[in-house]
Image: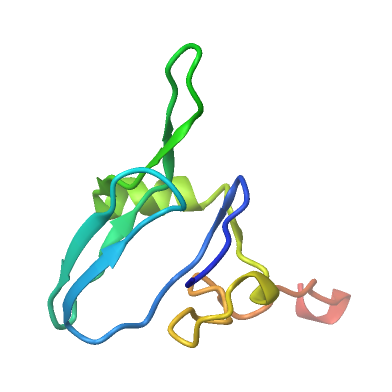
Length: 105
């Protein structure tokens, strides 16, 4: 297990180039080919069909669309990501914002 996701959360993995298989507890796995210097974005979606349990889906997402969607998501809590390949820091982090003092305005 790499991580346990909850709704409205995401995580980032740092992996070497190669082929990887991602899968939820149920549903079809996604095979991902990672090239050097490449960022790949995968979304956890749910296939819903009346009268049947929801099945996880792992479609790839264009980088521009993924970054737009990630703005409203939280980074996964470190305790929910036991794998060393999962970054413990939000990759979107920028220097902390601070209020300006009167002297700086």
